Image 1 (tube, rainbow, N blue to C red):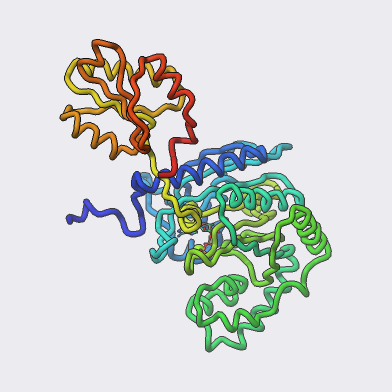
Image 2 (cartoon, rainbow, N blue to C red):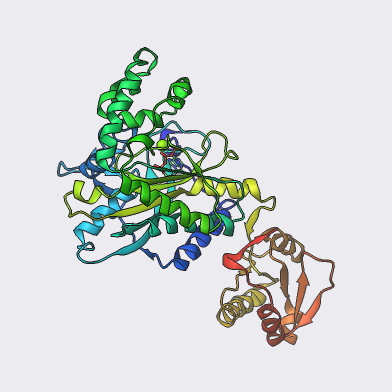
Length: 431
Ligand code: ATP
Ligand code: MG
């Protein structure tokens, strides 16, 4: 295959057999976000490179080696967004949304990171991202977790474990940093290059390393618990009480620090073992310092992001039946006059019944071959129009998925019958 006919490595086509599952996931997310009164915001996929350097942090995998960065024709450095939070913060500041206002928003779309592609890890991947701007918590922190739990429940995804931690305030982290540096210095010889390089600039990041060789050292590393300030401790206790009220189980993972630099206090991650090594399904946390860091005034905020590919993968792992798109009715039209009539009838049906999916047989074919196509379309019904049917204005309605016999119906009867069908959301029905 020539170069131009290959997709870029790590960037996937999501084909028609897969999109129904994506739609189910996205529709469920939309319903859940509506249920908590979060409003949608749509943002560009390109931002100035500087935005990500200043928010995510220079000493991170993303900024050091994973961003798709290029110079625009006027020389400005632009980057395809590797995550959504920075863009939301930028948009909130540049649109003046933080002046005596608070907002609960969500957004979704593709993110770009030049990682090593593997199952559940791609270079273009999709996220659903939720942010509460101007809220101090811990009530909103709990809501973040409640809504993610509800999303999993709606999708029928069991066995996703909630891990929780608190990173305290910047002051508490400064003390902790020093302790971490001391600790890791003792194992300097065992550290990989990334870890060595970050040891002094960003020691917390070492806890987030995916290098299995470091797992033992990381497991023994000191935790922040001892350095935690009283307010952060109270915040965390209030949060866990609210989550417990909701009956949501969690484990406190004192080594959960999250991959990005800007978190403070609450951090959480929902993890599963059902997706192999790509176990993080949804992760989030509080980032009270980020607005100021980006040149705005101080605004407390918290958010989460879920990987859509991972939700889709989990959905497929948890549900045997594969979702497929299928029209409700396929019109078999034999002969030119029948086709002309069929196209008009199909328009009338679409007008009469909102949500109805009608496919008309195109490019002719014998009755038998048209019925074959009807069957392949997945439609539960075929409507048969030939010369006789046209003359009598009564059509054959043939069930394609049951042994029930064919009936003869006029247009009114057809509409009544189709109206009584369960329409189902977005046509994604179980086969
Ligand atoms: P991981 O630990 O798997 O690298 P992360 O900590 O980098 O994830 P975040 O930056 O917090 O992830 O992004 C939120 C979610 O986006 C993750 O929980 C995951 O579901 C998804 N995600 C992150 N990176 C990728 C990727 N390269 N491909 C697919 N999904 C991803
Ligand atoms: Mg990552």
